[in-house]
Image (tube, rainbow, N blue to C red):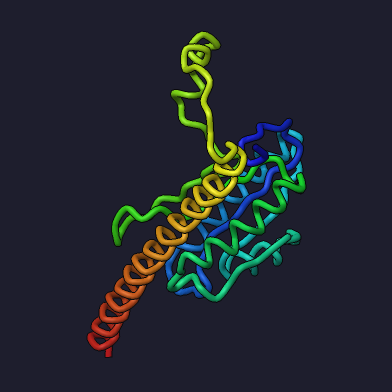
Amino acid sequence: QPLLERRELGTTAILVMTGDRGLAGAFNASVLRRALDEAKLERAAGHQVVWYAAGRKGAGSLRFRGAELRQVWTGFTDRPVYQDAEQIANTLVENYTDQVFDRLVMVFNHFDSPLVQTVNALEVLPIPLPERLTEMTPRDRAMMGELLFEPEAEEILTPLLTTALETEIFRALLESTASEHGARMTAMRNASDNAKDLSKRLTLEY
């Protein structure tokens, strides 16, 4: 199954998830910084890097730095729906199957609270196997016996794995959107507080 295949690493793809708008404090900059750090590590290991971006801010910043983006998705970061994740996943699956890249890392803000967002870098292709399967010995596999699938395992696995990828991307989009709203709320509150403090100080000086 191509989506489970562990290939020799030559090219790593990085999917950067930012917002379409600014005025959200360090929300966009922190994701971009982490993505550039990931790219630096990959190049140091001798791997090429290809870029994908969801969100205008990330795409614009990467282009400004001379990065060539293979695909950009915009216009939905404020309110993503599952179809947006499907669209992204379809392109990524097609590119991975065509061996455009050998590994995909998704960089996005994880929502901890309205005040705290943590940048995550998550490998989503090839699709990670559960630990219990990767740790199985040949004897354990033999003891499982032969499994019969109806229809064929390939027919079952392909849509299931694609759906798993879509779900992972959709979760990241929702996390990113919640983080963006939280970061913008905090940034606007800080700006309002600073404006009030400045107004009081200038009034006293006057």
